[in-house]
Image 1 (cartoon, rainbow, N blue to C red):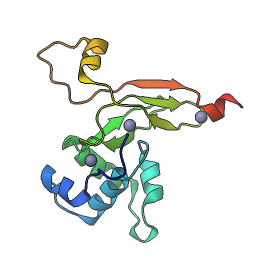
Image 2: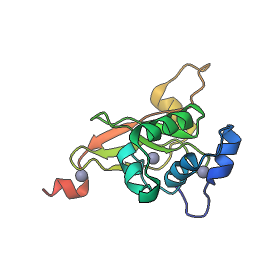
Image 3: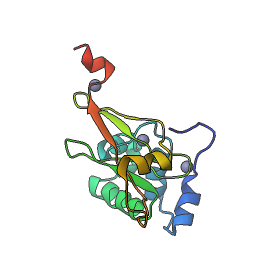
Image 4: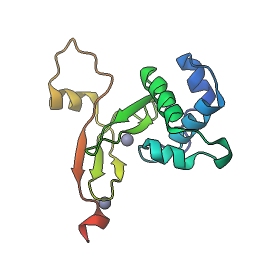
Length: 145
Ligand SMILES: [Zn+2]
Ligand SMILES: [Zn+2]
Ligand SMILES: [Zn+2]
């Protein structure tokens, strides 16, 4: 859940993470920063400019570097295609709902840390840096079919 005004900027995010500013990295990060829902690799490829065609392997490699620097979160789905979203201050950890027919994924409001503790009762010496809560079902459109 992001507000339009408060957003990260691709170059600064790369700089803070200590990653070099390649045009491919900037382009992919820009797409993720402006996305309303978590994106799959195919979603990202679809949004890339035609003239700057990138192959799938490049996109995966860049996403994995973002992931290991904690810039983005990876959200698994039940059919094995992971989705990605920003893991920045503007996009705190939150659950997702996923439609198993049309495969749309929607972000839910963030949950507070105390709610997280209640949910998972994690050991107190455990530092959480990612939580995946996945709720699967049918979206409004697919329920009518
Ligand atoms: Zn941000
Ligand atoms: Zn659906
Ligand atoms: Zn989300």
